[in-house]
Length: 510
Image (tube, rainbow, N blue to C red):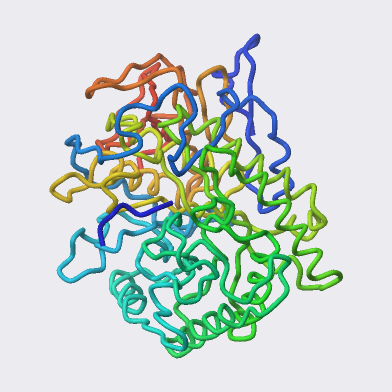
């Protein structure tokens, strides 16, 4: 993603005879379990996932999908619902599931954007002016000032979980320094570094030197960075115009250097996305893994990764909805991996989505629908097997916006905090499943509290008004919470459900 230009089953009352039920698997760290739902109808039709709007397919996207922020005033945040204070049970959802990509304006002095007033558990160092190009200003010269400040400000605010994302070849190191097609601010940032041949052979010292320098600096700073992400969107030409073999060589070299510096560090695969023009996850992942196999036959370290990463957007500009787009992205990833020579070794690895949102705000201008996407994306991805999801981007005024014009939290930002409160410390007890257009996800919270998130994908919101349908929950549930952070509402018979999930609970824990 390019930064804007600025510095079990469902409830028995739901699953009635004669209605089809579709399911997503209970969370697992096995990528092969994703194949359980590939090709399954999951509340929506097939969809081509997207994340950078360059050549949108027909029908034409809504006005503003390709340019300009959505500046509609949104509802301010309210307080979060507290959870029980007893320790989380085994399998409980961790805070680190909720990650953020933070705008660089969060770290400037004075601050352009306030530190998030909502809880989250992990920071991704991308679109924070900390790329290879930003740090390695010329051969042998490194400026870690911005990186150090970004980490320091985060630590001062209680965040200590960082993933550093590699990307953006410096112009001086680029094999095509005059290339103006790249998405980063500098020319040649999407081209391979000089000396590296198309088959992955040759001199990779420029890259090796940078990885060595930044890992050494990390050691000198007390190892704040524990996770290393090998390249942002290498399947998208404006991010990487090299071959899969060149990226495989770079990933292998980086893995070796990082592990030598810190044996406990975890390294991810390069992270593909989908820009809607055919540069998709499926077409990248298999050639990349095949290139690794060719370059390192029989190497026990192959595929040189501890975590599988991808970018999963539910692109509203392309009429995508979370229930189908998230299925599609992970399905493409799983198919590619299962067809590679590394399907067995990759089975046990965790899966992270390091970037995602509804993409352009103009594609989803209604504040309540934005909140709905936030809640549904986080609920669904955990059920699908994603163990971390980093939202893109807090502080961005055009993509995945969480702030009003006065820098207060908007309704989507509030929803993020609410669903954090719903999920963290709870355990998914049955997968998210659809009965017609009604989706449910069942949880057990600490203390044995039974909870169910529920929404209706056939409903929508417009201009502050949301359509709803009637839902008859189990008598287990006594009250429910909404994404706006309002006080709990007692349940007396049926409840109204809409596009925004609500959380039914068996006990008042507020």
